[in-house]
Every structure is written in structure tokens, then in C-alpha cells.
Image 1 (spheres, one colour):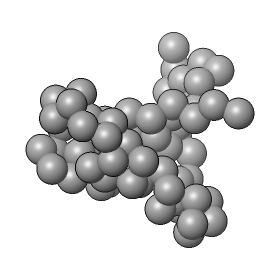
Image 2 (cartoon, rainbow, N blue to C red):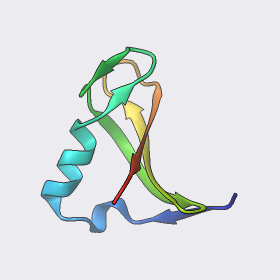
Image 3 (cartoon, helix red, strand yellow):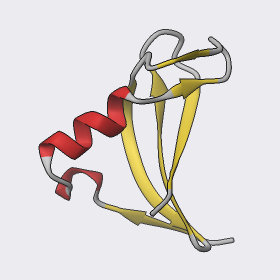
Length: 66
């Protein structure tokens, strides 16, 4: 599937903050550690935000569902 970049920073500040803090890290096995360096994109019909865990630096991905 083709990955199409979107502008994460065009979202309202409160929404950005919510997505950056409400995360799950598979490596740390803990919620809400935070995400840095976010990239928003679509892949097929999925809308995703990907970044790095604030604790360990592992890639974390959040799928946004309406």
C-alpha cells in the first residue's frame, strides 16, 4: 500500500497534545509514555500517526478511528 503523508501540525494544538500523550509502546509495554517526532499519514484506508516513544525511542504507531 502507498503511504501518503499528511500535516500533523495542521491539527488543533489540543488534539495534537492528546495524540502525543495517549500512546502505547510495545517495547516498554506501558501506556501514555508519550511520542516525539510525529508523522501523520494514510496507508490505504487507515489514518496513522507514527513517532518515537519518549522513554525508549522505539517507533510507536497510533491508528486513528472515527
